Length: 606
Image (cartoon, rainbow, N blue to C red; front, side, top):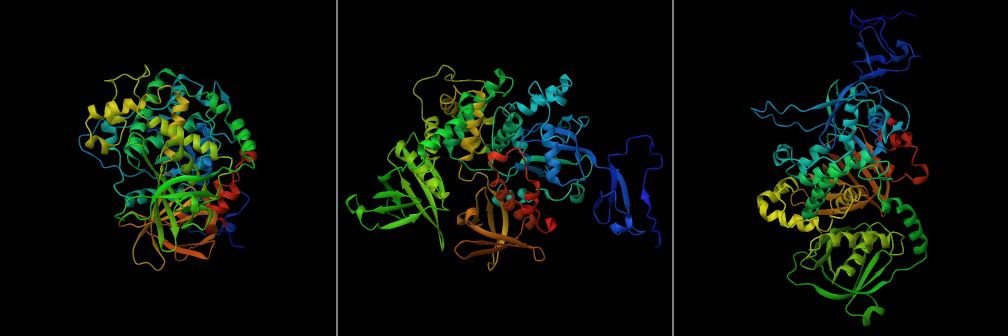
């Protein structure tokens, strides 16, 4: 056998006495780490012309967090991004790292005369990397953050909400002007199956750590201080930068909650304890499940009104509605309800969106019903809050394939009622809400759209009015309420990719949500079709022609090629959400990494 000698690139003045245990060989041409130390170079297929670089596996990385803080820490460049994120989350004390990933930041436009805009970077490169599943805590924080006052100050920045950003800071942020711009951002997620170096990420590169999968599991304020804070910050910036649409009333409520959270966080140093309500949540849900088991909720004698088509010239017509299982049926009158209905509508897989104005007593439910030719639009108009809460809860459950007898029906009603209560205009004051507060900066609490629409003196009383309904909430409850309202928005959790469906001549948008895929008309922005994951039989990717094919129940097959992102990103989103749905409380402490890579890795996992 002929010996093969391969030149290694090693610095001539390297200190021989230093610790080389973290170093490994990187095969530059093949973009591959040589980590199997028992293998010979010949077994790897390396020849004399190979370029091998001897370098450390862990290198500094600049990491931008959702709250705007930038950390400099040591990250693993030789493991998959999935494992690298797990290591980062262990260091920062963030549970369930599978919900997060790394995103290449959007290039910001460099402005002239901006010499004082150098960002402050907090150094964590001296923090030792631990392989333990959970960090050792000291005074409620990981031990490595308790080493010095400086480190404690960094942890406080991670675990305490930031004050509302100045209007000029909001103005400097990149804002997606269209769904195509959002699609380009969502195409910048790193591949979870490959390492940083394989994706062109170099030492001291800048990346964003963000929540990628909007399926938040086992959220415990007592243990998830950093996780909750960063999730709140990501949600807040999504609202302020109009990444997600909301109504004007909802925006005022978001502004009021931000104002309240900012005020309370100044008096409550850390969000380390959960509220009594959160402590008792699990036992309450268990007792509710026992109570609801076998019960049948009757909503068969409720009168609502509806409009069959969006562009019709006719107004709403009054019908007698019956809600049964996951379907609604309507009749001309109560007397005719014993016979055949005019129509029965199955709500499974439909889109449910609120259209509510409590002040104007407007309680509408907008339904987009899947149909062979696209989506049929139906509006239900309720007479009052109580009727709206029941029907909205029923429609939401039915869209997920659940009946009114489901154990979550009553809790869904209560959640909707509490949201409506916060939108009510309060005639009295609560003592904590002054009639006019000069310290409130409305332009820091609402998106730029409302800066142009209203003056500050018009926004202030509206935000303070909404504030009266949340002024009694604790810091933890206020953050949780903000996240609940954010998650109830119609477009919550959607990531966008511009695609070309097989057989189509035009580009369209695919919205990928926690429980569904949405086909969106790029020209007008209307939802054309919705497919739910629980109706999915299989999906696969033709890696040669870069095409995704999905098969659903009922002989429904779709196929598309991706325009603004690699098809691996779509494959990873779908597989990732399927993986999130497999988690259960019994095995919440153990993360099945092998299953994640099987579902998201594609041909690289085989």
